[in-house]
Length: 146
Image (cartoon, rainbow, N blue to C red):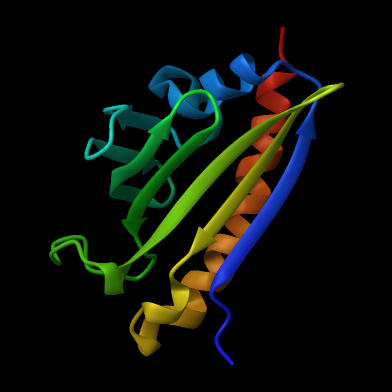
């Protein structure tokens, strides 16, 4: 059986608008998600995430519905960066925000691993499971800064 979904939920004691800014403004994304982020915040816009230690990943914004849903499709780990962007070499990351009485619930879901070439599927999934743990811990630390 191929696992196709990574799902993480975190509750943050901050207003929805604060969390939305942290996940959609390039200057804020660059503080917790990658070392440099470029984002055209519109459906069809480009997102570029660079990590000094891991390289550069590009993607396309699929959903931009402030302040509740932000989704982008990005090249999977192990895909040649020069390969044409396609459904079978990318995954879909969706951030969904919901207000709670004590702040905001953030849900991050990444899907599309089952469609990846078999040679990279398991590695891409494992890398992103551990990657999301690290990145979301960095988000929590970031939004708690004064």
